[in-house]
Length: 174
Length: 203
Image (tube, rainbow over all chains, first blue to last red):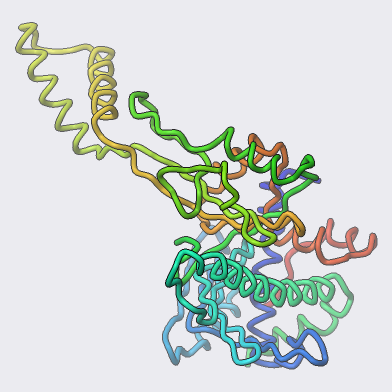
């Protein structure tokens, strides 16, 4: 395997494309983001999107945030060749809610807020708190990794160029 | 941001390779050998080591507090001396004036000025305490997953170095390529496509 820093730079576009595909899927085909027939997990957009356009030796950043933000400006940036750098998302499952941001270039999870759990009252509670938090992190990671695997199999298939890219382009221009 | 914060940022790693058995003793030894130790008399810009997640300033790995269920939970402590350039400038200016007065000279050579500046920095390093930074982690030996609860590049680099030194196992960061290549169950032909993949034009 190549050096990790080379792979990081060579393939960070996959992370940007994953975020764009997520945004597109949340808005246009949320049913495809259910990983299994009996899955109850859903994904929604959060309150912030960061985009960046690095074309023609110039750097243009677009940040859209707010409770009822209009993400159409983000679509405009995409239509000019910008990448999604960071996407804020809300994952809900079984009445529980996770809020977090996903960074495209490295798939880092930022600012994860898990569902509320009991607070630590005594030293004995600490172990339970850490176990429960870790369980909640794992649940989020499993779901998002599942979506990434779904994306990557699509990305490596002929369907990507023949069907997905035209649909994403149509959405961007809509 | 740490284990008990309401919001955390996480960089995920895969621990590559197998720990020597007995696993718990191997981890304990690795932690103890590279445990954070205060070196107050020593001038060092940065010192680092492992510490307990629940006792950052008096680590003790002889007990089993670092084992929580199926996880190893501990912290990386990095102490760094940060001296404001303004303080260095102030001290240097004062010392330079005194030095010129005592020697009756009007100027110092470039080399002498640098030497004086180094003395100022060394002196300040002894007097200014290092700032401790604590970074928590959760390591699942069963799944080889390690969650590092900080995304700061310097802290992650320190983690990767110290982890290898302590346990003789490299950490592989989860990035788009590693998530695609190693964990998506790809076939050989899909891997081949991945190796030649270029960005899509989505606009």
